[in-house]
Length: 482
Image (cartoon, rainbow, N blue to C red):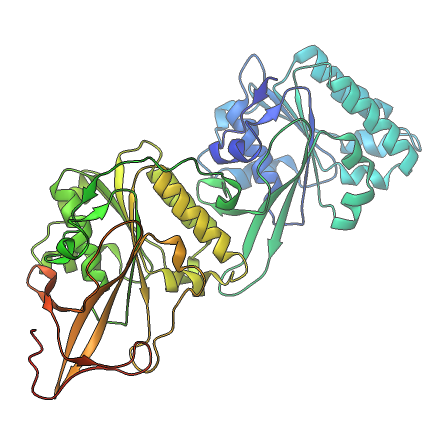
């Protein structure tokens, strides 16, 4: 089966490799969902002088206005107009057509498909045809069109502002080979667009709603990570150093490679500084690393690392360290997963930090989806052989609630950093709550923020406090350093 690439690698992935030659695809969606931009982007990605793209408009916006709106996008090439991408207006043909007769229009489109062998033919909008003929005539005309184009190598795209109800009954949707539904959802703080492949004959496409963004570069789609099946996690009996002084000794000489590690703790306890330690260790060993943050900007993190004697600017410039700052107001789970997935494509990135998971879960506002999403995200990272370091915030005061009840089993390692009361001072303690299939130290250990970052000290004795219900306190007269 020969396929035509859409020019968007992630959309090809969703569609099982692209658009089948000789097929008809309906792109449906409300105004503003991105139908025209997507179709135009596919045209400019595929059109050549030998096999051009023909863009038919019915009674939509004038061609001059259509072209003017495209000039802002880098995929638009003015020199390709006419020679590679041709616009044809069908409005006059529709006005002069006899009642219930679309044959002249169909003959025009088929003639171009068979004689000129274009790579792509677009009709924008097909829904307008319903205003000129009966349902029976429309069905007959579309049957003739799709069956005759099927004998060519041309891909036919039919665009329309169809409602969900019309998608269930319209002849376009029963006769076509594929249906791509674009949607637009108004919500705060930002609106959301999505793409769903409703139908695709003889193709194993990716199901679910995939996030869409209209960016300065054009139409972008981000595959829903739950639809991607991760492979097996590579089996390696290798430990990697955490970069935190004293921690590796508690974890059986280091963290197993390709493990997902969760670090719990209240605000200000040192979680982000521990992230810097983890990445600095990888950079010192020549590894490529990625840091995804929802609060601190790139400059803030580089400056913070410098405070602890770590140079993050040089590896950031030469590409060994990628810092992605995603403001919580712009956070989308699919976009985030795409950032992670593309960093892992070449297998060179070995350490990834997400700071923090609790922020991500709250800002995304997809509580029902989040468990499956998190499972898939961790699976994608671990399958690539990378080690994941994730932070999550707990309460500073009062009962310590498990932030991801029922999901902790997804992480191979769980580390907790807590505040501790000692007379009139506040200190920190660290303990390894969990390590899967590995021996680890179960005791509480003193923890401090030094000039080189987070450091773990000796075990702490004579500590009282019920886990999760009251602050940890040193017994009267005890030494907090022990």
